[in-house]
Image (cartoon, rainbow, N blue to C red; front, top):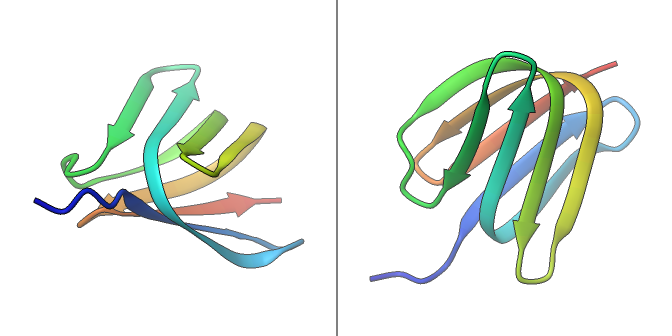
Length: 83
């Protein structure tokens, strides 16, 4: 079994596309729901108005009070932040 984590791609107008490797968890906190996405999680797509926390062994990033669209498929999580 592969112990590598997930790949995360974050896109916004300020920084462009930034990619992170070996991510262990992604927490999405919205006003309507909370999700904890980990490796081999089911495919999901949605819109978030809230916060997203991305955690890996060498990565700990938080996006607070954002409006964004996300998609998780085949251990690749895409986050497109709207300005």
